[in-house]
Amino acid sequence: MDRLLDRVALITGGNTGIGRGVALAFAAEGADVAVAYHGHQAEAESVAREVEARGRRCLPVHVEVTREADVRAMVDAVRDRFGRIDIYVNNAGVQKPQPVADMTVDDWDHMMAVHLRGAFLCCRAVAPVMAAGGGGRIIVVTSQLGYIGRAGYTAYSAAKGGLLAFTRALAKELAPQGILVNSVSPGLIDNGFDPLPEAAKRAHAAALPLGRLGTVEDVVGAFVFLASDDGRYFCGQTLHPNGGEIMP
Image (tube, rainbow, N blue to C red):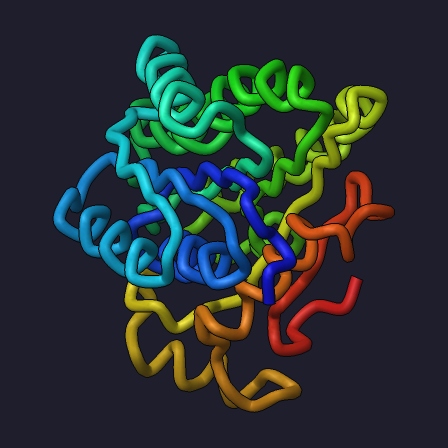
């Protein structure tokens, strides 16, 4: 407990799924949290209430991560409320499974914009705030599909693969400023957001060495570790809570 005492964390997509779990785990470790969301405002407000019930402050903030002005306004709002940003979790993302033959240019561009343009805009905006405060942690949410791909997920897999390379390059660039950049690459997590049919999920779980799908609770520890002093010698690394599906 208290591994993140009095630190300030900003999490995009922090209102649902893994982002929500990370927000609550950070609060339990003593952090104040800004929960950035695009849709589902009610869920963001619910997370804020849960964070505050843990005795920490929370700021829900609306953002479209592909818009430069929105991202700057988000970072300004968090800095104005809390005075600094110590941890940034780049978790905003979208999924739209479809065959390549059915994919439009707009479909492809939207996937790349949310994941890659969004990561660029958000990390570019938070890095100077962190550097001014003496450093910080950036954690990029990637995916095992960035390594192995999945039929029907070509755009998503490509975007996540790009984020893996982005993480490594950014880590080298920002480390001299005291900012450690790493990523977490979850396997298939049973959080209600993966659009795979239930039969496919059961088959996937049966094929894993651990024999089950992951839960949000299975992965949040990786984020706490990287955000805390325990992760102080990790730079440009990726943690893989995936039940043993890939073992890089």
